[in-house]
Amino acid sequence: MKIATFNINGIRARLPRLLEWLEREAPDVACLQELKCADEALPIADIEAAGYGAVWHGQKGFNGVAILTRGRAPDLRRIGLPGDPDDSHSRYIEAEVDGLVIASLYLPNGNPLGTDKFGYKLRWMDRLRAHAAELLAEERTVILAGDYNVVVEDRDVWSANRMAGDALLQPETRQAWRRLLYQGWTDALRALHPKEDKLYTFWDYTAGCWQRDAGFRIDHLLLSPTATDRLQAAGVDRWARGEEKASDHAPTWVILD
DNA sequence: ATGGTTGAAGATCAA
Image 1 (spheres, chains in turn green, red):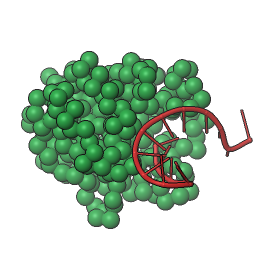
Image 2 (image 1 turned 30 degrees about the vertical axis):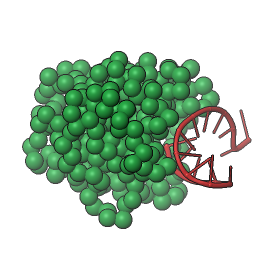
Image 3 (image 1 turned 90 degrees about the vertical axis):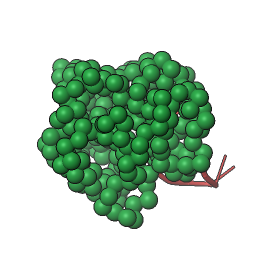
Image 4 (image 1 turned 90 degrees about the horizontal axis):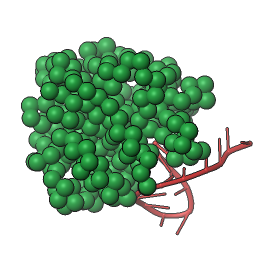
């Protein structure tokens, strides 16, 4: 069973890229982020024609998350993280698929530092950790997949020095990541590629970042203990980033037996 | 030196 996460950066502008990737890689589950469209504007007919069902939480202009499943629609479990009824951002959706609990999440970027955007990021991470603890307490097989906007280690970015002032690699950001992981989650890509220094999943559009492989590893799949027991493979579909009119992220995936 | 690019909205913001 192949489960992927893909920050699509505008599902309408990127629809040909999405359909091409679904056909070529045939993921059983595709967690999407940055739909950048309202609920009613999602091109569901095209997705269904490609053989996928979906649940989604859109938002006009920015954010927006979805879970696509091959053959049929997933069973929706939750839209939005608990803990802040005033949070209007569409950044979390959770569904059940073949006995697995799967979440598609778009963690706040948090830039620039010195604004409430960074505080919002850290508060959102607190809420994610609280909800993740509840999922583990259910003893279900869980995959938390998405754009975490967290550079876990210095080697997960092309230049930690040049990016030192970025919200993605602040000590507070990494501390919040570790608090989440130490509940018992496994960072699937890193677990299967412990020595690989360029497991990048994102390359900025500017300054020739893609051409000189100046990337970031920020799209992650966190696996619960019983999901980790089933982990067979993990990777990044780098080819997708090199296509015309590509998203700035590449699809990132795991295979469970 | 505060650059560079993209999408969606709309004459700017978020990334």
